Image (cartoon, rainbow over all chains, first blue to last red; front, side, top):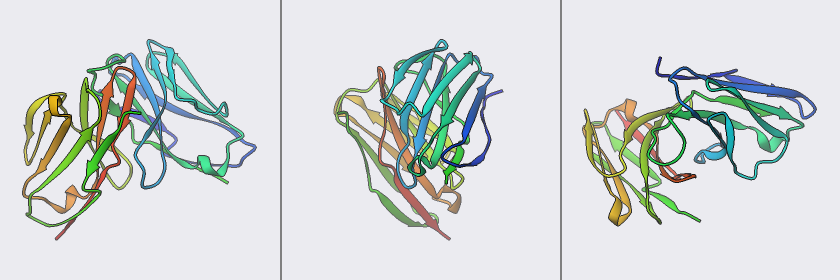
Length: 114
Length: 107
């Protein structure tokens, strides 16, 4: 298995809703990442987990809450989002964190906040 | 901050043409990856190339780390090559994408 999966593919939510994005990999990778990509822009790093511990938080608002319950699974909990948070959310994994490690990306979740 | 710049930002080719995409970075690099993002948003790994040259079919890439640039060559382009090409620089905990090159290959 050499892929990263993400669910759901699409999500529409209101500003008062609570929802979660899920990412899974079974490649034995120990680093997992969340990126946010707005239309016609490059992906921007949000969070990095290394060995199930949060190692990087790129000053992301607290309405985004990451969770890494085990080495294969990464969640992003969403609460009280704003319309400007509408974007493609991409998950990635690599063998370990840090330099020199090839990243593999999932297909993304396209989020719309009404 | 660390800058990663890609050129050209947009490129239109006739099917069968060759092209070179460039990625410049302002600081040292431990890892440099090239991706192709398809119209559905999936980032497809093309090359993991911190230095040297690699080839995969019609695509090849060269990174000259000492001069802080990487090149992606596409030969005999096909309509399926259309999409956005990104380079991503990885240095320690700094992961930075370039702005991308949007490629359209016309039949």
